[in-house]
Image 1 (cartoon, rainbow, N blue to C red):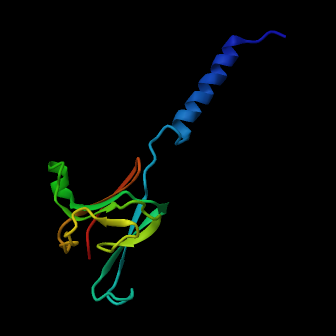
Image 2 (image 1 turned 90 degrees about the horizontal axis):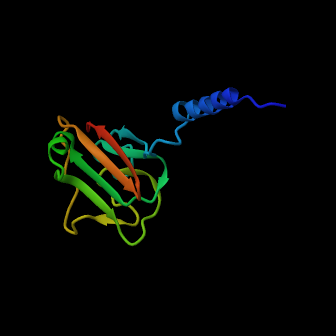
Image 3 (image 1 turned 120 degrees about the horizontal axis):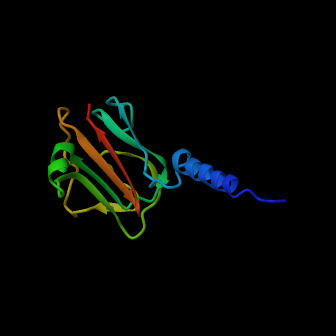
Length: 141
């Protein structure tokens, strides 16, 4: 039985094209983020609308930061309105509120407090978990 080298080359090329265009194995993984806004009083202890962020699965986050989108586009070191970093070992989280204390995390600056968000501005939430990163642009209510 003779093997046809042209057929073998075509088969390998077809498999390579399939892997490149129809699988995500070659793409960098990203953390998916969804924003939800809850009216005042819906969540316990809230007196104003609350922004809740949900991730596609639980992550042991190493950094959570909110910056103004316009400032971040022109300034690599944009002022963070809320910036948390992992302490010794962060616990995996799937959902969290803007400005909340996250388990296993601490403020980047010990005295820093989350700043209020302006409804007329657009902000970017940037989360990191090791080498994985996710970003979401949003407007507060």
